[in-house]
Structure formats: C-alpha cells, structure tokens
Length: 169
Image (cartoon, rainbow, N blue to C red; front, side):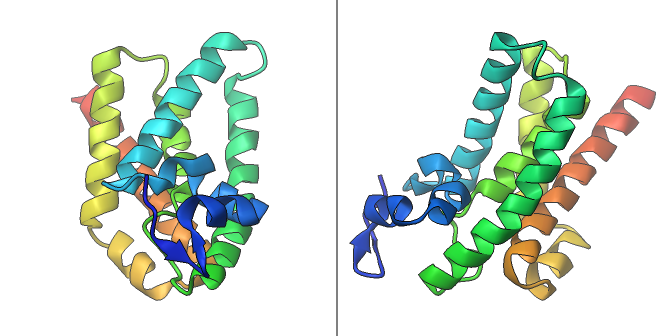
C-alpha cells in the first residue's frame, strides 16, 4: 500500500478523512503502489462482473447507465475536492475516473467472453495511458474534477470505437 503523506496523514488516513477522498481514490484501489490507474480499472472490472452476476435483475443496462452518469457527476465533485486537498489536480491515486469510464466500456461490451473482456481492458488502458488526440488535449487543458473525469470517458469512447470496428470487420 502507498504510505506517502498527504496533508500530514498517511495515504490510508487521507483516504478515510473525507468521503470525497474515498470516492476519488476508488475505495482504496488507487492506493496501489504500482500502476494505480490499472488497479482502479481492475477494481471496476471485478466490481462490474460481481455486481452484475449477483444481482442481474437490478444491475441491468439501464441501471448501469444511470449509475455511470451519477458516478460521473459524483466523480467531478470528488476529484475536484481530493485534488484540491492533495495540492495536485489529477493525482495518480485518483482512479474514480478509470472506474466510471471502464464501467461504461463494460456495459456496452457485455456479455462477452473472458478474452473479449481482457481485450477491452487492454484497449482502455492503452488509450488512457498513451492519450492520443484529443484525449491528451482534454487531459492538459480541461481543469478540475471535470477534466479528470472527461479524458477517461474519451478513452472509453476510443475503446468502444475499436470494438465497433472489430465487430464490423
């Protein structure tokens, strides 16, 4: 676990100090000492699969889309607040953006084989890390919580575009 200090607290203390921190840091998945964005995306994948399998009647596509829209709005607030409290607008431990964006990918790709889910994961992480245009532009020029959230949504759209092209060809 990442034990760096944030405002005089260790990472776990900072996580629990404010609900915005808990949300922005992906319920703790962002505290991974290596590749926190990938850890957040794994959390998204596992939580999506488990929730959808456990309560399939509740977690249908319509409810997932409502959760994603509400999660995006909540994420704008949580990432804005957490970034301000950390003194870094888009700190690596803030992974709520990856979670919401990958849920969007999964809700539009599923049902899918494990191999297809892996491909979705790899594509999304590629676009999120490499940030081809206009993702990099949004990452660098949109500020605050909206900017943190938006570039990952665009990475999700790129992933979905790859899947759409793959299915057509």
